[in-house]
Amino acid sequence: MYNSTRRIKFNLFDIINYMFMFIFAFSIIYPFWDMLMKSFSTPAEATKVGFNLFPKELTFAAYKAVFLGSDIAIGYFNTIFRTFFGTLLFLLVTVSAAFALSKKDLPCRNTITFFFLFTMFFSGGLIPSYILMKWLHLIDSRWALIIPGMFNVFNMVIIRNYMQSIDKSLEESASMDGANHIYILFKIIVPVCKPILATVALWTIVGHWNAWFDAMIYINTNKKQVLQIFLRKILIQYDNLEVTKFLQASGQNINDFTPDSLKAAFMYITITPILFAYPLLQKYFVKGIMIGSLKG
Image (cartoon, rainbow, N blue to C red; front, side):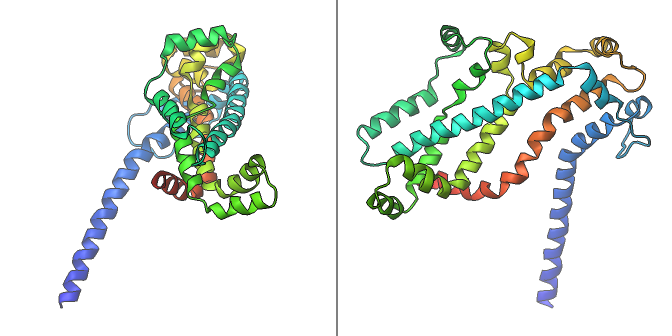
């Protein structure tokens, strides 16, 4: 009798807990779903007030207008260029620094670490950074979006801590066989560090993909702008009248969709590629961040 009563109370807790989590998850997912369905809706469906899970009639007119009437291809190219080379160079520089600082016999190791940590709390500021970019002749260059992000102290510390948790016998065995530091780093340490590298790589990919402020500051030419700048123009700078002008200029029929449908379609075109990166790297997340944050 006691066990039966206790089991009923436990099941009630589960039911309430599941209901709460369902409502919480639904409140997060529904706005994204509503925007997605609005991007596929006809003007009559998009302007309808109320709770609608599915539109009665699907249309791809908003997506067609985005691809035909905007610089979406230019934005994609520049964003992919920035994300690919930005992440690749970030991993190369940051992993090299982390490997060097993981050596306890490195001369002036604490001083170098303090120098890095100091820059993490105190930066030069926006104006000095802009002057530096101008002095380096990087204004209106795609590399102005990549070079400043090639090193991150926080991620370097996490990677260094992960490297310090690796059994030193691996490096000692390779050294006895005549391997140098570069061979040990790229042939032994990097393969062992896959979880933490995948974790920081995902952070870097998302950061580069979503970044827009530095592009607004450093890039003047429209052909070098990233995708998020075009999205910002559509969502913030363009009101309904501007969107109408945009559609008329591209030769699209403004009666096939609403400005809100166009904005929703543009938003999903920009975020869909980065959403596919999460499932691919999620399995490394917990292991990488836990070991990297605890050791050291």
